[in-house]
Image (cartoon, rainbow, N blue to C red; front, side, top):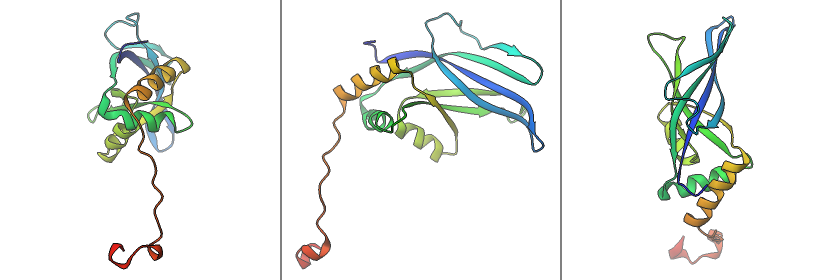
Length: 158
């Protein structure tokens, strides 16, 4: 994978009345590489009246140099993930859809700071390798500097 953009599809699961307090519950099940086989419109893969799985194709995940730190943080977290921002329809709470897919830990953090719903799913090994190559090429973490305790600094430097 030499490109800096991947096309993906997001699989969302909807459950009817999962408990006494909720009418609907949604979760991001998976993010799949979309080579065009999923079409361009969302479609229901299964719906038994209680649980439905809906596939939303056509999301572009682009890598950008200014997000290098976010990719690095995702990769070094111990469990790299896809971050999926999604929304629930205010007028029809039985409907939810993904809005954005990213690999940047920092971008996901900014979305959550803006009160958006962001879930994550594990990153497959081939995508992790692709992201690692990009991060290695475009990002260098700043070396950590040891801070001297204040008691060892001159009074004017405290």
